[in-house]
Image (tube, rainbow, N blue to C red; front, side, top):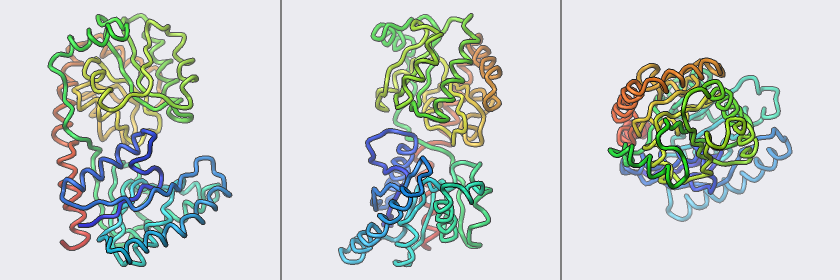
Length: 377
């Protein structure tokens, strides 16, 4: 099947790393592994973070010639597609392209990870919300990765629209190291981190808003367990980097190590060497870094959301705490820091859960079956 792929928030080949970009790449890889010919239809970004109505108007106007360009390419250059697949649709990043192309070509329109926020009906993104509603009404198929989003979109779906609940997934190539202690000593020498202490690790972009709030909460939570011996490794960078570093400054340089932004391959050794992954996950959709941690047999302490609960099984592969409850988060970290046997047990459970439910191979088969049901193949 020839599939046209589009991500209105951020193209899969965008230079800035993020969980959103990673999942877009994984969706393409999953469909490609299933034998489909996946083509990126456009890099047109419809995202408007600030609620600037004039900026949104310009984005919408720019979409008109982009639709014409896509249709010209598909109709006049033998680059036809059988289905259009839009990833991540919401009021701040509506899809001005896919529904129009699908209507013109009379092909199925599929959306993955769609959400709808009724409170924006009279807000600064009301046109984006209206566009999202129209796109949902047009959709032949919906792929949901976050259970939180499913209920709000139901009123807009066609009676015959097919739905798929898909667990977050990633590839199976990286695996836990059999030489965790040796790797820990090596990294410790390279970056001057005490390898005898338990290592906590977190991986996240340092952005304003919920990411920064999560970092601030993490700093406060760890301040409450300073009586324990541990080191924290923070992997990531962004426009809020200085604010994040300021939040952790009271813990001291000997406690906290900042690596800056690393590639996926560069992150793997830290996940293999660490003892516990920690992330408050405030308003997190699900968190690809949590899934990466579980792939590496690393137990996780995270804040509970509907999305994080699809990855972390509470008291089995890690501990999920009440959202934004700093005291509960600190207590969970303390519990696992003081019980290495429990950490090891949860880590092994995490690895088994990943292999059973979150692999790229499994997702590829599930998505393939779903897409073929939409086209009658």
